[in-house]
Image (cartoon, rainbow, N blue to C red; front, side, top):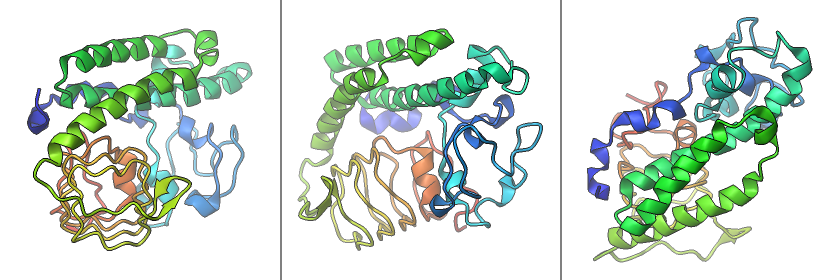
Length: 287
């Protein structure tokens, strides 16, 4: 499958990697550490329920998160790990029913979230990779990662997630380099990598409207409040890029690589922003 045919990818590939809060037990609202300064309702310790978590595991202010400035909540995405742990790993038994296993359940959720995030990236890589050798390796890694998500609780907790992630990252980087090389053919690179923070490209508040970003390496880049209006980011690698308050109105991200819903949820777009088929347009964006 060529990169240009990505728009025809069956959305079912991502079906189990999308959030379904109704089948979850509010794991993100209790298992995570919260900080009010990072856009959450209040400071809270991991394992303590959010003040807005209802008895039925729903959020009391879910429809008004953006209006209340809770960007941390709107940005978070578990990649479907919540319902996986709730309905498969624990067979529908919630943490309220068995307080003794609650701590273990939260730990499993945090690990499952990492595995599902890797599955998201691997799934995308598989759909855009044209090198048959790497495709075979990606297919194997998808199957292996899915196998890990089906392990029992003790086995999941005992996983060396860092080692598995290293293998995944190697395949993702190979995919990125091949795709970006094709996207840059005939293009003049005008993106400068002079300024970095801890090795990550610093484009904080930068005006990138006239910068050629096709096939750019934006992995982990700080694009906070950057101006990307009308930019063509085709073939660019955005894995881990920080898009908080970035202006992507009218930008073309249809063929951008490794961008997630959580990144999109933190940016400012409009009806003219073009997104990959795997992502949904936030309802609070400009019309």
